[in-house]
Length: 280
Image (cartoon, rainbow, N blue to C red; front, side, top):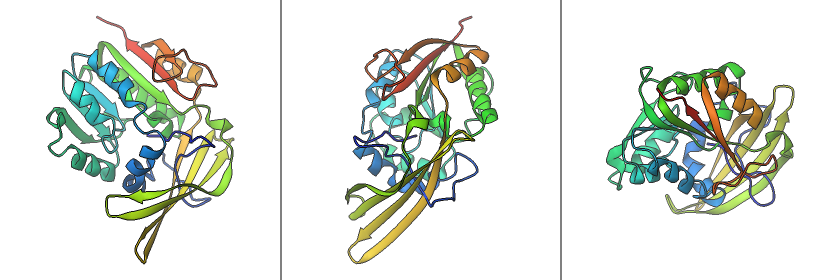
């Protein structure tokens, strides 16, 4: 659920300086109303074909961690052979996902569950053939114990021979700090309002955290509304994530540097890891 940098720097997420949440999941309910609008202007659908490609090579159930508004979930369900389950902790995000699904093609294959990725609500051996962690979701787990728990939870529900795909936020410590920069402006058709995103970025290097403070200013005629919140992402390198996966019994078989399958490089704009659970 992280954001991609725009051409002149980061465009990530969010709130008031000095008010960062204590837990990485905090802030996402507030962000839900703006998530799709911002992502259409930054990430767009760049990653969707990648996840669809993995789904087309999967015959069984698929699990998406941090499924949010269904931006990835629904396109994957349209090409998947089996059912797709999306889990997210944010009730506001899931409400928007259910609205998106409606009667859309592929929606009948999708199940949405409100759950914490550290404690997946499935019995061990639930046997998902593909588990997807798009858009930096694992880096919103701000403590090492949280990340370890989430990786272990996935290892317990993925089928033997199943694949775990992780999309990471690239090189967080290198993101420049700035304050109150206008990052995006534009019209939002839903509700007929005009939005302005004013963003700040802070680094807490001692704790290895990058905090994105966002202020969304919404104008509709003479009416003006302001929403402020913060999102946090934790620094995790590719070698560090690889070690955590291997400790959980997952073998890394590819590290990619873009959504078309190019080899990974530390300077790449995209960091992707594919890890497989040993077969029976």
